[in-house]
Image (cartoon, rainbow, N blue to C red; front, side):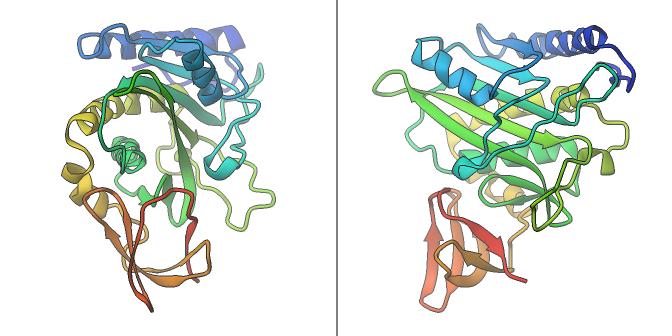
Length: 273
């Protein structure tokens, strides 16, 4: 595992540590995923945007693209993901990366849940999951997931799985609830160490999901479900009690009109105070 990134390490030394982490991950994945590579960039607008651009140009090889700084990071529903980088004398405040994989699947339902479960399980037992794509600690957002796809053939698509994880306390200006950060749970964590910890299990989980879908992960997700049993409000104002997810990853909400199954990530769900 790569050593922690020193607070006062110069930029070229930090990049060297990132490249060491990249080699470690590539070596672990090489036998499982032909042609897989890890690429580390000092700065990019968005790792997801970059891989989607490459996919549209026909570049659909399996890759893990990491950015020390994102200037236009994106989250679900078009929300901005703040990703402060590291200058010469500062640590990286967030881990931002995108995993690009060509996948052949009949049913993509529940992929974001599978990704969140893998990342949470790799990092800490006290991290919970807020449907459909957030990692929470103490009811505060620690990380977010954004999944996009590009067509390849009639049967296959190129999946771009983006993850943004707070390492140090982020700027919570304008937010109702201040975000969480990994150092509160793992005091010595660096972005490179976090990547090494989550990368291989994440790839294994996505490949397993491609074969078996979400159903085998349902019980593990339930154990980390931050909404289970809580009163929630949907984006259309409907209120109800969250009752877990089904075998396809749909959120089940018991409302006054009966059981409602939420299947689209375009619906916003929040706990009701």
